[in-house]
Length: 611
Image (cartoon, rainbow, N blue to C red):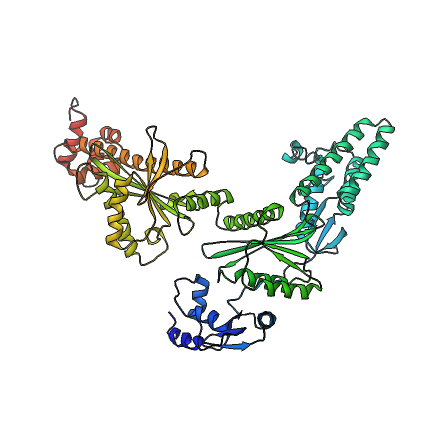
Protein backbone atom coordinates (compact mmCIF):
# COMPACT_ATOMS: atom_id res chain seq x y z
CA UNK A 1 0.00 0.00 0.00
CA UNK A 2 1.14 3.56 -0.76
CA UNK A 3 2.91 4.96 2.33
CA UNK A 4 2.04 8.51 1.30
CA UNK A 5 -1.76 7.99 1.29
CA UNK A 6 -2.41 10.08 4.40
CA UNK A 7 -0.19 12.89 3.13
CA UNK A 8 -1.87 12.85 -0.29
CA UNK A 9 -5.34 12.80 1.29
CA UNK A 10 -4.46 15.81 3.43
CA UNK A 11 -3.33 17.65 0.30
CA UNK A 12 -6.50 16.64 -1.56
CA UNK A 13 -8.75 17.88 1.27
CA UNK A 14 -7.16 21.32 0.87
CA UNK A 15 -8.21 21.57 -2.81
CA UNK A 16 -10.90 24.09 -3.81
CA UNK A 17 -14.45 23.07 -4.69
CA UNK A 18 -13.95 24.35 -8.24
CA UNK A 19 -13.85 22.66 -11.66
CA UNK A 20 -10.47 21.71 -13.03
CA UNK A 21 -8.00 19.05 -14.13
CA UNK A 22 -5.84 16.94 -11.81
CA UNK A 23 -2.55 15.30 -12.86
CA UNK A 24 -1.10 12.29 -10.98
CA UNK A 25 2.69 11.68 -10.96
CA UNK A 26 4.74 8.65 -9.86
CA UNK A 27 8.08 8.75 -8.00
CA UNK A 28 10.02 9.48 -11.18
CA UNK A 29 7.77 12.45 -11.94
CA UNK A 30 6.11 10.73 -14.89
CA UNK A 31 2.41 11.53 -15.46
CA UNK A 32 0.41 8.34 -14.89
CA UNK A 33 -3.18 9.65 -14.84
CA UNK A 34 -5.10 12.77 -15.87
CA UNK A 35 -8.69 13.45 -14.90
CA UNK A 36 -11.18 16.30 -14.75
CA UNK A 37 -13.64 17.21 -12.00
CA UNK A 38 -16.62 19.46 -11.37
CA UNK A 39 -15.31 19.92 -7.81
CA UNK A 40 -11.59 19.10 -7.44
CA UNK A 41 -11.64 18.54 -3.67
CA UNK A 42 -14.47 15.98 -3.80
CA UNK A 43 -13.11 14.07 -6.76
CA UNK A 44 -9.41 13.84 -5.87
CA UNK A 45 -9.99 13.06 -2.17
CA UNK A 46 -11.96 9.94 -3.19
CA UNK A 47 -8.79 8.36 -4.53
CA UNK A 48 -7.01 8.57 -1.16
CA UNK A 49 -9.86 7.37 1.07
CA UNK A 50 -10.87 3.73 1.55
CA UNK A 51 -9.42 1.49 -1.16
CA UNK A 52 -12.11 -1.17 -0.73
CA UNK A 53 -14.55 0.57 -3.07
CA UNK A 54 -12.03 1.02 -5.91
CA UNK A 55 -11.52 -1.25 -8.89
CA UNK A 56 -8.19 -3.08 -9.10
CA UNK A 57 -6.95 -0.74 -11.83
CA UNK A 58 -7.63 2.33 -9.64
CA UNK A 59 -5.94 0.69 -6.63
CA UNK A 60 -2.83 0.02 -8.73
CA UNK A 61 -2.80 3.62 -9.91
CA UNK A 62 -3.17 5.01 -6.36
CA UNK A 63 -0.35 2.74 -5.13
CA UNK A 64 1.95 4.40 -7.67
CA UNK A 65 0.98 8.03 -7.00
CA UNK A 66 3.76 10.05 -5.38
CA UNK A 67 2.29 13.51 -5.92
CA UNK A 68 -0.35 15.36 -7.92
CA UNK A 69 -0.90 18.81 -9.35
CA UNK A 70 -4.05 20.56 -10.55
CA UNK A 71 -5.27 23.29 -12.88
CA UNK A 72 -8.42 25.29 -12.08
CA UNK A 73 -10.77 26.13 -14.97
CA UNK A 74 -13.81 28.38 -15.29
CA UNK A 75 -16.23 25.54 -16.07
CA UNK A 76 -16.53 21.77 -16.27
CA UNK A 77 -16.59 22.07 -20.07
CA UNK A 78 -13.25 23.89 -20.10
CA UNK A 79 -11.86 21.19 -17.80
CA UNK A 80 -13.04 18.55 -20.27
CA UNK A 81 -11.33 20.31 -23.21
CA UNK A 82 -8.10 20.69 -21.23
CA UNK A 83 -8.22 17.05 -20.07
CA UNK A 84 -8.57 15.80 -23.68
CA UNK A 85 -5.65 17.97 -24.79
CA UNK A 86 -3.36 16.84 -21.95
CA UNK A 87 -4.18 13.14 -22.36
CA UNK A 88 -3.47 13.36 -26.09
CA UNK A 89 -0.14 15.05 -25.29
CA UNK A 90 1.08 12.78 -22.46
CA UNK A 91 -0.78 9.42 -23.01
CA UNK A 92 -0.76 8.49 -19.28
CA UNK A 93 -0.50 4.82 -18.36
CA UNK A 94 -3.77 4.55 -16.40
CA UNK A 95 -6.05 6.52 -18.74
CA UNK A 96 -8.14 4.76 -21.38
CA UNK A 97 -5.96 4.98 -24.48
CA UNK A 98 -7.45 3.81 -27.76
CA UNK A 99 -5.39 3.31 -30.90
CA UNK A 100 -6.71 4.52 -34.23
CA UNK A 101 -6.10 1.27 -36.07
CA UNK A 102 -9.01 1.71 -38.47
CA UNK A 103 -7.27 1.59 -41.83
CA UNK A 104 -9.05 1.48 -45.18
CA UNK A 105 -10.54 -1.72 -46.56
CA UNK A 106 -10.87 -2.89 -50.17
CA UNK A 107 -12.86 -5.40 -52.19
CA UNK A 108 -10.38 -7.51 -54.21
CA UNK A 109 -11.19 -9.30 -57.48
CA UNK A 110 -8.42 -11.78 -58.25
CA UNK A 111 -6.94 -11.88 -61.77
CA UNK A 112 -7.82 -14.52 -64.36
CA UNK A 113 -10.99 -15.93 -65.92
CA UNK A 114 -12.15 -17.67 -62.73
CA UNK A 115 -11.84 -14.62 -60.47
CA UNK A 116 -12.75 -14.67 -56.77
CA UNK A 117 -14.04 -11.84 -54.59
CA UNK A 118 -12.49 -11.19 -51.16
CA UNK A 119 -11.95 -8.33 -48.72
CA UNK A 120 -8.47 -7.05 -47.84
CA UNK A 121 -6.95 -4.32 -45.69
CA UNK A 122 -4.17 -3.35 -48.08
CA UNK A 123 -4.03 -2.66 -51.79
CA UNK A 124 -1.15 -4.49 -53.53
CA UNK A 125 0.37 -4.35 -56.99
CA UNK A 126 -0.51 -7.97 -57.81
CA UNK A 127 -2.56 -7.66 -60.99
CA UNK A 128 -5.88 -7.88 -59.11
CA UNK A 129 -8.72 -5.37 -59.42
CA UNK A 130 -9.61 -3.40 -56.27
CA UNK A 131 -12.81 -1.56 -55.35
CA UNK A 132 -12.55 1.03 -52.59
CA UNK A 133 -11.26 2.29 -50.29
CA UNK A 134 -13.95 1.93 -47.61
CA UNK A 135 -13.76 3.26 -44.05
CA UNK A 136 -15.56 0.31 -42.49
CA UNK A 137 -13.86 -3.08 -42.56
CA UNK A 138 -17.00 -4.55 -40.95
CA UNK A 139 -19.13 -3.31 -43.86
CA UNK A 140 -16.72 -4.62 -46.51
CA UNK A 141 -16.40 -8.01 -44.83
CA UNK A 142 -20.17 -8.41 -44.41
CA UNK A 143 -20.92 -7.26 -47.97
CA UNK A 144 -18.36 -9.63 -49.54
CA UNK A 145 -19.64 -12.58 -47.48
CA UNK A 146 -23.24 -11.78 -48.54
CA UNK A 147 -22.30 -11.46 -52.22
CA UNK A 148 -20.37 -14.75 -52.27
CA UNK A 149 -23.29 -16.59 -50.63
CA UNK A 150 -26.05 -15.08 -52.77
CA UNK A 151 -24.25 -15.55 -56.08
CA UNK A 152 -22.71 -18.91 -55.06
CA UNK A 153 -19.08 -17.95 -55.67
CA UNK A 154 -16.22 -20.07 -54.23
CA UNK A 155 -14.31 -18.83 -51.17
CA UNK A 156 -11.89 -21.76 -50.89
CA UNK A 157 -8.16 -21.79 -51.73
CA UNK A 158 -8.56 -23.95 -54.86
CA UNK A 159 -7.31 -22.47 -58.13
CA UNK A 160 -9.17 -22.86 -61.41
CA UNK A 161 -8.85 -24.42 -63.91
CA UNK A 162 -5.76 -26.09 -62.31
CA UNK A 163 -7.81 -27.82 -59.57
CA UNK A 164 -10.72 -29.06 -61.71
CA UNK A 165 -11.83 -32.56 -60.64
CA UNK A 166 -9.02 -32.92 -58.07
CA UNK A 167 -11.33 -33.37 -55.11
CA UNK A 168 -14.92 -33.53 -53.99
CA UNK A 169 -16.89 -30.30 -53.62
CA UNK A 170 -16.97 -28.91 -50.07
CA UNK A 171 -19.95 -28.37 -47.76
CA UNK A 172 -20.80 -24.97 -49.31
CA UNK A 173 -21.85 -26.76 -52.50
CA UNK A 174 -24.23 -29.07 -50.62
CA UNK A 175 -25.88 -26.19 -48.72
CA UNK A 176 -26.28 -24.22 -51.99
CA UNK A 177 -23.72 -21.51 -51.17
CA UNK A 178 -21.25 -22.39 -53.95
CA UNK A 179 -21.73 -23.44 -57.57
CA UNK A 180 -18.65 -25.72 -57.22
CA UNK A 181 -16.52 -24.94 -60.28
CA UNK A 182 -14.07 -27.50 -58.82
CA UNK A 183 -16.27 -30.24 -60.31
CA UNK A 184 -15.33 -29.03 -63.78
CA UNK A 185 -19.02 -28.99 -64.78
CA UNK A 186 -19.60 -25.22 -64.46
CA UNK A 187 -19.46 -23.23 -67.70
CA UNK A 188 -17.13 -20.24 -67.69
CA UNK A 189 -19.91 -17.99 -69.08
CA UNK A 190 -22.24 -18.93 -66.19
CA UNK A 191 -19.45 -18.31 -63.67
CA UNK A 192 -18.67 -14.88 -65.17
CA UNK A 193 -22.36 -13.97 -65.14
CA UNK A 194 -22.57 -14.72 -61.40
CA UNK A 195 -19.36 -12.78 -60.79
CA UNK A 196 -20.66 -9.70 -62.63
CA UNK A 197 -23.96 -9.86 -60.76
CA UNK A 198 -22.09 -10.05 -57.45
CA UNK A 199 -19.99 -7.01 -58.35
CA UNK A 200 -23.12 -5.07 -59.37
CA UNK A 201 -24.57 -5.95 -55.96
CA UNK A 202 -21.43 -4.72 -54.16
CA UNK A 203 -21.15 -1.51 -56.18
CA UNK A 204 -24.80 -0.52 -56.35
CA UNK A 205 -26.36 -2.00 -53.22
CA UNK A 206 -29.32 -4.34 -52.92
CA UNK A 207 -31.98 -2.06 -54.47
CA UNK A 208 -30.03 -1.41 -57.68
CA UNK A 209 -29.01 -5.06 -57.81
CA UNK A 210 -32.66 -6.16 -57.64
CA UNK A 211 -33.59 -3.81 -60.52
CA UNK A 212 -30.81 -5.16 -62.73
CA UNK A 213 -31.55 -8.80 -61.86
CA UNK A 214 -35.25 -8.30 -62.50
CA UNK A 215 -34.51 -6.91 -65.96
CA UNK A 216 -32.23 -9.89 -66.67
CA UNK A 217 -34.90 -12.33 -65.45
CA UNK A 218 -37.58 -10.79 -67.68
CA UNK A 219 -35.22 -10.85 -70.66
CA UNK A 220 -34.41 -14.54 -70.05
CA UNK A 221 -38.12 -15.39 -69.76
CA UNK A 222 -38.87 -13.50 -73.01
CA UNK A 223 -36.17 -15.57 -74.74
CA UNK A 224 -37.75 -18.75 -73.31
CA UNK A 225 -34.63 -19.38 -71.14
CA UNK A 226 -36.74 -20.51 -68.24
CA UNK A 227 -33.99 -22.28 -66.28
CA UNK A 228 -31.82 -19.17 -66.35
CA UNK A 229 -34.81 -17.01 -65.39
CA UNK A 230 -35.48 -19.31 -62.41
CA UNK A 231 -31.86 -19.04 -61.24
CA UNK A 232 -32.01 -15.24 -61.42
CA UNK A 233 -35.34 -15.28 -59.54
CA UNK A 234 -33.67 -17.23 -56.71
CA UNK A 235 -30.90 -14.65 -56.55
CA UNK A 236 -33.45 -11.81 -56.36
CA UNK A 237 -35.17 -13.57 -53.44
CA UNK A 238 -31.82 -14.06 -51.68
CA UNK A 239 -30.91 -10.37 -52.10
CA UNK A 240 -34.34 -9.32 -50.76
CA UNK A 241 -34.02 -11.67 -47.82
CA UNK A 242 -30.59 -10.28 -46.95
CA UNK A 243 -31.89 -6.71 -47.23
CA UNK A 244 -34.85 -7.49 -44.98
CA UNK A 245 -32.47 -8.87 -42.35
CA UNK A 246 -30.62 -5.58 -42.23
CA UNK A 247 -33.79 -3.49 -42.15
CA UNK A 248 -35.05 -5.39 -39.12
CA UNK A 249 -32.00 -4.22 -37.17
CA UNK A 250 -32.97 -0.55 -37.22
CA UNK A 251 -35.65 0.55 -39.64
CA UNK A 252 -36.11 3.94 -37.89
CA UNK A 253 -32.46 4.78 -37.19
CA UNK A 254 -30.89 7.25 -39.62
CA UNK A 255 -27.53 8.55 -38.38
CA UNK A 256 -26.50 7.25 -34.98
CA UNK A 257 -23.86 5.53 -32.83
CA UNK A 258 -25.01 3.12 -30.11
CA UNK A 259 -22.50 2.59 -27.27
CA UNK A 260 -22.82 0.08 -24.43
CA UNK A 261 -20.45 -1.67 -22.04
CA UNK A 262 -20.20 -4.83 -19.97
CA UNK A 263 -17.88 -5.22 -16.97
CA UNK A 264 -16.72 -8.41 -15.31
CA UNK A 265 -13.72 -9.76 -13.40
CA UNK A 266 -11.69 -6.58 -13.72
CA UNK A 267 -12.32 -6.18 -17.46
CA UNK A 268 -14.62 -3.83 -19.37
CA UNK A 269 -15.75 -4.23 -22.96
CA UNK A 270 -17.22 -1.28 -24.87
CA UNK A 271 -19.18 -2.11 -28.02
CA UNK A 272 -20.10 0.50 -30.67
CA UNK A 273 -22.77 -0.01 -33.35
CA UNK A 274 -22.64 2.62 -36.08
CA UNK A 275 -25.77 3.26 -38.17
CA UNK A 276 -26.11 5.27 -41.35
CA UNK A 277 -29.30 5.53 -43.40
CA UNK A 278 -31.01 2.90 -41.26
CA UNK A 279 -28.30 0.27 -41.83
CA UNK A 280 -25.60 -1.01 -39.52
CA UNK A 281 -22.47 -0.05 -41.45
CA UNK A 282 -19.78 -0.63 -38.80
CA UNK A 283 -19.16 -2.05 -35.35
CA UNK A 284 -16.16 -1.89 -33.03
CA UNK A 285 -15.16 -3.54 -29.77
CA UNK A 286 -12.62 -2.44 -27.14
CA UNK A 287 -11.55 -4.44 -24.06
CA UNK A 288 -9.39 -3.04 -21.26
CA UNK A 289 -8.91 -3.13 -17.47
CA UNK A 290 -11.88 -1.75 -15.54
CA UNK A 291 -11.34 1.61 -13.86
CA UNK A 292 -13.61 4.02 -12.04
CA UNK A 293 -17.16 2.98 -12.97
CA UNK A 294 -18.49 6.50 -12.30
CA UNK A 295 -16.47 8.11 -15.10
CA UNK A 296 -15.47 5.16 -17.31
CA UNK A 297 -18.21 5.76 -19.91
CA UNK A 298 -17.39 9.46 -20.08
CA UNK A 299 -13.67 8.79 -20.45
CA UNK A 300 -14.26 6.17 -23.15
CA UNK A 301 -16.48 8.50 -25.22
CA UNK A 302 -13.87 11.26 -25.05
CA UNK A 303 -11.06 8.94 -26.09
CA UNK A 304 -13.13 7.27 -28.85
CA UNK A 305 -14.22 10.48 -30.60
CA UNK A 306 -10.73 11.96 -30.21
CA UNK A 307 -9.50 9.32 -32.68
CA UNK A 308 -12.61 9.56 -34.91
CA UNK A 309 -13.25 12.54 -37.16
CA UNK A 310 -16.87 11.70 -37.93
CA UNK A 311 -19.32 12.36 -35.07
CA UNK A 312 -22.96 11.34 -35.73
CA UNK A 313 -25.98 13.49 -35.02
CA UNK A 314 -27.28 11.07 -32.37
CA UNK A 315 -25.50 8.93 -29.77
CA UNK A 316 -27.41 6.42 -27.62
CA UNK A 317 -25.79 5.14 -24.39
CA UNK A 318 -26.64 2.37 -21.94
CA UNK A 319 -25.95 4.53 -18.88
CA UNK A 320 -25.76 8.19 -17.91
CA UNK A 321 -22.97 9.99 -16.03
CA UNK A 322 -22.46 13.34 -14.28
CA UNK A 323 -20.66 15.12 -17.12
CA UNK A 324 -23.01 14.06 -19.93
CA UNK A 325 -24.02 17.65 -20.82
CA UNK A 326 -20.40 18.80 -21.11
CA UNK A 327 -19.58 15.79 -23.29
CA UNK A 328 -22.56 16.54 -25.55
CA UNK A 329 -21.33 20.14 -25.91
CA UNK A 330 -17.80 18.93 -26.76
CA UNK A 331 -19.16 16.51 -29.38
CA UNK A 332 -21.35 19.25 -30.87
CA UNK A 333 -18.30 21.50 -31.25
CA UNK A 334 -16.37 18.68 -32.91
CA UNK A 335 -19.23 17.93 -35.33
CA UNK A 336 -20.09 21.57 -36.03
CA UNK A 337 -23.78 21.06 -35.21
CA UNK A 338 -25.85 19.82 -32.27
CA UNK A 339 -25.26 16.23 -31.13
CA UNK A 340 -27.99 14.52 -29.10
CA UNK A 341 -26.61 12.21 -26.39
CA UNK A 342 -29.41 10.12 -24.85
CA UNK A 343 -29.98 7.10 -22.60
CA UNK A 344 -33.15 5.50 -24.11
CA UNK A 345 -35.47 3.72 -21.69
CA UNK A 346 -38.03 2.16 -24.05
CA UNK A 347 -38.84 1.38 -27.65
CA UNK A 348 -36.55 0.46 -30.55
CA UNK A 349 -33.70 2.63 -29.28
CA UNK A 350 -33.63 0.83 -25.93
CA UNK A 351 -33.67 -2.52 -27.78
CA UNK A 352 -30.65 -1.45 -29.84
CA UNK A 353 -28.76 -0.44 -26.69
CA UNK A 354 -29.63 -3.80 -25.09
CA UNK A 355 -28.43 -5.65 -28.20
CA UNK A 356 -25.21 -3.65 -28.14
CA UNK A 357 -24.63 -4.51 -24.45
CA UNK A 358 -25.27 -8.22 -25.17
CA UNK A 359 -22.58 -8.10 -27.84
CA UNK A 360 -20.18 -6.50 -25.36
CA UNK A 361 -20.92 -9.35 -22.93
CA UNK A 362 -20.37 -11.88 -25.73
CA UNK A 363 -16.99 -10.34 -26.58
CA UNK A 364 -15.87 -10.66 -22.94
CA UNK A 365 -17.30 -14.17 -22.69
CA UNK A 366 -15.40 -15.32 -25.79
CA UNK A 367 -12.21 -13.84 -24.39
CA UNK A 368 -12.68 -16.03 -21.29
CA UNK A 369 -13.70 -19.16 -23.18
CA UNK A 370 -17.43 -18.91 -22.43
CA UNK A 371 -20.51 -18.05 -24.48
CA UNK A 372 -23.05 -15.32 -23.91
CA UNK A 373 -25.62 -18.01 -23.10
CA UNK A 374 -23.44 -19.34 -20.29
CA UNK A 375 -22.91 -15.81 -19.04
CA UNK A 376 -26.69 -15.33 -19.15
CA UNK A 377 -27.20 -18.33 -16.85
CA UNK A 378 -24.60 -16.98 -14.43
CA UNK A 379 -26.34 -13.58 -14.47
CA UNK A 380 -29.63 -15.32 -13.71
CA UNK A 381 -28.02 -17.31 -10.88
CA UNK A 382 -26.48 -14.12 -9.48
CA UNK A 383 -29.90 -12.43 -9.46
CA UNK A 384 -31.67 -15.49 -8.00
CA UNK A 385 -29.25 -15.85 -5.09
CA UNK A 386 -28.67 -12.11 -4.55
CA UNK A 387 -24.91 -12.36 -5.11
CA UNK A 388 -22.66 -9.30 -5.30
CA UNK A 389 -20.63 -10.56 -8.26
CA UNK A 390 -21.00 -13.01 -11.11
CA UNK A 391 -20.33 -16.60 -9.90
CA UNK A 392 -17.67 -17.44 -12.47
CA UNK A 393 -15.87 -19.97 -10.24
CA UNK A 394 -18.27 -22.35 -8.46
CA UNK A 395 -17.39 -25.31 -6.22
CA UNK A 396 -19.94 -28.01 -5.45
CA UNK A 397 -19.67 -30.85 -2.88
CA UNK A 398 -21.42 -34.19 -2.25
CA UNK A 399 -20.95 -37.00 0.32
CA UNK A 400 -21.18 -40.70 -0.55
CA UNK A 401 -21.10 -43.83 1.69
CA UNK A 402 -22.77 -47.19 2.20
CA UNK A 403 -24.19 -47.66 5.69
CA UNK A 404 -21.39 -45.54 7.10
CA UNK A 405 -18.57 -47.44 5.37
CA UNK A 406 -16.05 -45.98 2.92
CA UNK A 407 -17.11 -42.38 3.65
CA UNK A 408 -15.93 -40.15 0.78
CA UNK A 409 -16.72 -36.77 -0.77
CA UNK A 410 -16.39 -35.28 -4.22
CA UNK A 411 -15.73 -31.67 -5.19
CA UNK A 412 -16.42 -30.42 -8.71
CA UNK A 413 -15.69 -26.98 -10.17
CA UNK A 414 -17.55 -24.95 -12.79
CA UNK A 415 -15.62 -22.11 -14.41
CA UNK A 416 -17.48 -19.62 -16.63
CA UNK A 417 -20.52 -21.90 -16.63
CA UNK A 418 -18.65 -25.06 -17.73
CA UNK A 419 -17.10 -28.01 -15.83
CA UNK A 420 -13.39 -27.55 -15.07
CA UNK A 421 -12.44 -31.21 -14.62
CA UNK A 422 -8.78 -30.49 -13.94
CA UNK A 423 -9.90 -28.83 -10.67
CA UNK A 424 -12.09 -31.75 -9.45
CA UNK A 425 -10.95 -33.20 -6.11
CA UNK A 426 -11.69 -36.34 -4.01
CA UNK A 427 -11.77 -36.59 -0.21
CA UNK A 428 -11.64 -39.63 2.07
CA UNK A 429 -13.39 -38.90 5.36
CA UNK A 430 -10.82 -39.42 8.14
CA UNK A 431 -12.27 -37.81 11.28
CA UNK A 432 -14.74 -40.52 12.32
CA UNK A 433 -16.36 -43.85 11.46
CA UNK A 434 -20.05 -44.33 10.73
CA UNK A 435 -22.60 -42.26 8.84
CA UNK A 436 -22.88 -38.51 9.53
CA UNK A 437 -23.32 -36.39 6.40
CA UNK A 438 -23.24 -33.11 8.36
CA UNK A 439 -19.95 -33.92 10.09
CA UNK A 440 -18.54 -35.27 6.80
CA UNK A 441 -19.37 -32.05 4.96
CA UNK A 442 -17.89 -29.95 7.78
CA UNK A 443 -14.66 -31.99 7.69
CA UNK A 444 -14.30 -31.70 3.91
CA UNK A 445 -14.78 -27.91 3.86
CA UNK A 446 -12.42 -27.52 6.83
CA UNK A 447 -9.69 -29.39 4.98
CA UNK A 448 -10.39 -27.49 1.77
CA UNK A 449 -9.90 -24.08 3.42
CA UNK A 450 -6.91 -25.23 5.47
CA UNK A 451 -5.30 -25.82 2.06
CA UNK A 452 -6.45 -22.34 0.98
CA UNK A 453 -4.57 -20.69 3.85
CA UNK A 454 -1.49 -22.85 3.18
CA UNK A 455 -1.47 -21.77 -0.48
CA UNK A 456 -0.79 -18.12 0.47
CA UNK A 457 -3.18 -16.66 -2.12
CA UNK A 458 -1.85 -18.70 -5.02
CA UNK A 459 -4.60 -18.42 -7.64
CA UNK A 460 -4.34 -22.10 -8.59
CA UNK A 461 -6.26 -25.06 -7.15
CA UNK A 462 -7.18 -24.69 -3.48
CA UNK A 463 -5.40 -21.33 -3.42
CA UNK A 464 -8.31 -19.78 -5.36
CA UNK A 465 -11.31 -18.56 -3.37
CA UNK A 466 -14.56 -19.56 -5.15
CA UNK A 467 -17.31 -17.08 -5.98
CA UNK A 468 -19.98 -19.54 -4.79
CA UNK A 469 -20.19 -22.91 -2.98
CA UNK A 470 -23.12 -25.26 -3.57
CA UNK A 471 -23.69 -28.31 -1.36
CA UNK A 472 -25.70 -31.36 -2.30
CA UNK A 473 -28.14 -31.23 0.60
CA UNK A 474 -30.43 -29.04 2.65
CA UNK A 475 -30.25 -26.64 5.57
CA UNK A 476 -28.46 -29.19 7.82
CA UNK A 477 -25.41 -29.35 5.54
CA UNK A 478 -25.48 -25.56 5.07
CA UNK A 479 -25.59 -24.96 8.84
CA UNK A 480 -22.68 -27.36 9.46
CA UNK A 481 -20.50 -25.60 6.87
CA UNK A 482 -21.55 -22.13 8.09
CA UNK A 483 -20.00 -23.01 11.47
CA UNK A 484 -16.77 -23.92 9.66
CA UNK A 485 -16.81 -20.61 7.77
CA UNK A 486 -17.30 -18.65 10.99
CA UNK A 487 -14.36 -20.39 12.71
CA UNK A 488 -12.04 -20.04 9.73
CA UNK A 489 -13.06 -16.48 8.77
CA UNK A 490 -14.22 -17.50 5.28
CA UNK A 491 -16.63 -15.20 3.44
CA UNK A 492 -18.00 -17.10 0.42
CA UNK A 493 -21.69 -17.32 -0.59
CA UNK A 494 -23.00 -20.74 0.48
CA UNK A 495 -26.18 -22.57 -0.58
CA UNK A 496 -27.54 -26.11 -0.58
CA UNK A 497 -29.22 -27.82 -3.54
CA UNK A 498 -32.44 -29.56 -2.50
CA UNK A 499 -33.99 -32.40 -4.52
CA UNK A 500 -37.64 -33.44 -4.76
CA UNK A 501 -38.96 -37.01 -4.37
CA UNK A 502 -38.04 -37.67 -8.02
CA UNK A 503 -34.40 -36.67 -7.38
CA UNK A 504 -34.71 -33.44 -9.37
CA UNK A 505 -33.32 -30.14 -8.10
CA UNK A 506 -36.33 -28.16 -6.85
CA UNK A 507 -34.79 -25.39 -4.75
CA UNK A 508 -31.67 -23.88 -3.25
CA UNK A 509 -31.48 -23.18 0.45
CA UNK A 510 -29.45 -20.70 2.44
CA UNK A 511 -29.69 -18.68 5.64
CA UNK A 512 -32.85 -16.96 4.41
CA UNK A 513 -34.71 -20.21 3.69
CA UNK A 514 -35.51 -22.03 0.46
CA UNK A 515 -35.58 -20.37 -2.96
CA UNK A 516 -37.77 -22.31 -5.37
CA UNK A 517 -36.45 -22.68 -8.92
CA UNK A 518 -38.85 -22.44 -11.82
CA UNK A 519 -38.35 -25.56 -13.95
CA UNK A 520 -38.63 -23.47 -17.13
CA UNK A 521 -35.70 -21.23 -16.25
CA UNK A 522 -32.25 -21.93 -17.63
CA UNK A 523 -30.77 -21.77 -14.12
CA UNK A 524 -32.89 -24.83 -13.22
CA UNK A 525 -31.18 -26.85 -15.97
CA UNK A 526 -27.78 -25.49 -14.96
CA UNK A 527 -28.16 -26.43 -11.25
CA UNK A 528 -29.69 -29.81 -12.07
CA UNK A 529 -26.72 -30.70 -14.27
CA UNK A 530 -24.30 -29.54 -11.60
CA UNK A 531 -26.03 -31.56 -8.87
CA UNK A 532 -26.07 -34.66 -11.09
CA UNK A 533 -22.38 -34.15 -11.93
CA UNK A 534 -21.19 -33.81 -8.33
CA UNK A 535 -23.31 -36.83 -7.32
CA UNK A 536 -21.82 -38.88 -10.18
CA UNK A 537 -18.30 -37.87 -9.23
CA UNK A 538 -18.72 -38.66 -5.50
CA UNK A 539 -20.44 -42.00 -6.16
CA UNK A 540 -17.76 -42.97 -8.68
CA UNK A 541 -15.07 -42.39 -6.08
CA UNK A 542 -17.07 -44.36 -3.49
CA UNK A 543 -17.41 -47.35 -5.87
CA UNK A 544 -13.69 -47.18 -6.59
CA UNK A 545 -12.87 -47.24 -2.86
CA UNK A 546 -15.22 -50.16 -2.24
CA UNK A 547 -13.71 -52.16 -5.12
CA UNK A 548 -10.20 -51.65 -3.80
CA UNK A 549 -11.35 -52.53 -0.30
CA UNK A 550 -12.90 -55.77 -1.59
CA UNK A 551 -9.70 -56.68 -3.42
CA UNK A 552 -7.57 -55.95 -0.38
CA UNK A 553 -9.82 -57.87 2.00
CA UNK A 554 -9.61 -61.01 -0.18
CA UNK A 555 -5.81 -60.79 -0.21
CA UNK A 556 -5.46 -60.05 3.49
CA UNK A 557 -7.18 -63.37 4.22
CA UNK A 558 -3.97 -65.06 3.04
CA UNK A 559 -1.46 -65.91 5.73
CA UNK A 560 1.46 -63.45 5.76
CA UNK A 561 -0.30 -60.82 3.60
CA UNK A 562 -1.21 -57.60 5.33
CA UNK A 563 -2.45 -54.22 4.04
CA UNK A 564 0.97 -53.12 2.78
CA UNK A 565 1.69 -56.35 0.85
CA UNK A 566 -1.87 -56.50 -0.51
CA UNK A 567 -1.52 -52.95 -1.84
CA UNK A 568 1.91 -53.73 -3.34
CA UNK A 569 0.59 -56.88 -5.05
CA UNK A 570 -2.36 -55.03 -6.57
CA UNK A 571 -0.13 -52.23 -7.78
CA UNK A 572 2.29 -54.71 -9.37
CA UNK A 573 -0.19 -57.18 -10.92
CA UNK A 574 -3.07 -54.69 -11.48
CA UNK A 575 -5.90 -57.23 -10.87
CA UNK A 576 -6.77 -60.20 -8.63
CA UNK A 577 -7.00 -62.40 -11.75
CA UNK A 578 -3.40 -61.58 -12.68
CA UNK A 579 -2.29 -62.46 -9.14
CA UNK A 580 -4.16 -65.78 -9.21
CA UNK A 581 -2.63 -66.70 -12.59
CA UNK A 582 0.95 -65.79 -11.63
CA UNK A 583 3.48 -68.59 -11.13
CA UNK A 584 5.57 -68.97 -7.99
CA UNK A 585 8.64 -67.26 -9.45
CA UNK A 586 6.61 -64.20 -10.49
CA UNK A 587 5.13 -63.96 -7.01
CA UNK A 588 8.56 -64.24 -5.35
CA UNK A 589 9.92 -61.44 -7.53
CA UNK A 590 7.03 -59.10 -6.77
CA UNK A 591 7.73 -56.07 -4.50
CA UNK A 592 7.64 -56.66 -0.70
CA UNK A 593 7.25 -60.46 -1.13
CA UNK A 594 9.26 -63.24 0.55
CA UNK A 595 9.54 -66.87 -0.55
CA UNK A 596 7.22 -68.08 2.23
CA UNK A 597 4.68 -65.36 1.54
CA UNK A 598 4.77 -66.05 -2.20
CA UNK A 599 4.18 -69.73 -1.47
CA UNK A 600 1.15 -68.87 0.72
CA UNK A 601 -0.35 -66.73 -2.04
CA UNK A 602 0.26 -69.37 -4.68
CA UNK A 603 -1.31 -72.13 -2.53
CA UNK A 604 -4.31 -69.90 -1.81
CA UNK A 605 -5.14 -69.63 -5.50
CA UNK A 606 -3.97 -73.14 -6.47
CA UNK A 607 -5.32 -75.31 -3.62
CA UNK A 608 -5.75 -78.34 -5.90
CA UNK A 609 -2.28 -78.08 -7.43
CA UNK A 610 0.88 -79.78 -6.14
CA UNK A 611 4.25 -78.06 -5.94
